[in-house]
Structure formats: structure tokens, C-alpha cells
Length: 119
Image (cartoon, rainbow, N blue to C red; front, side):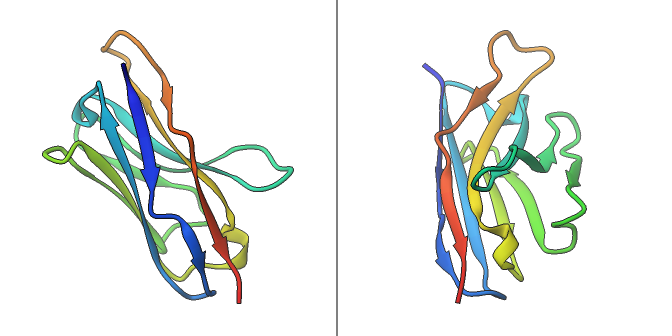
């Protein structure tokens, strides 16, 4: 059974930092393109960051470029999202997503973790 479990969310003041984790079981994150999405209340789910399976290439939404960093630890089978210089508009539920063009099964979603940026 595949599970993606996010953690690390919480309440932080504007300008602060958080690191989200996505621990995978049942799949190897090294073989999947891993993404972080977010969804704010009443809005559509938005792609935030991507790290590819091959080459570990990264890409980011314009709204988070220079502030967020996606990374992967294959040994821990975990994907991270380091979020710096947080703004109130970053407030959302953040979801981990795994997809592969070569491995059968998926895509897979985590249950989400709430990030609230407020003073």
C-alpha cells in the first residue's frame, strides 16, 4: 500500500520559515516525479514545486521562486519543501504528490498539512 505522509506544517509569522516533509512508503521517491501542491480556502489547487525522477531537476511556481526549495533524500525516502520568507498568501494546505511515467500505479496524493502565515 502506497502512502505519502506530510508533516511540518503549522503557524508561522510573516518572514518566517518552515520545512515540510513528505515521507513515502510503498514507493521509492527516487523513481517518481515528486510535486508539492497547495490549496487555499475556496481556491483551486496550485502546483508549487517539482523535482523530477531523472536528474532531479527542479521547477517552481513564480510566486515562490527564490523563497522555496524542493529536495529529495532517497535514503530517507522523503521529499522536503523548505519555505523561507513566508507571506500570508502562502497560507494553504500543502499536499505531496507522486507520479511516474515508467512505474505502474499512481499518481498518489498525501493527506495534506496546513500552513498558516499570520502575525
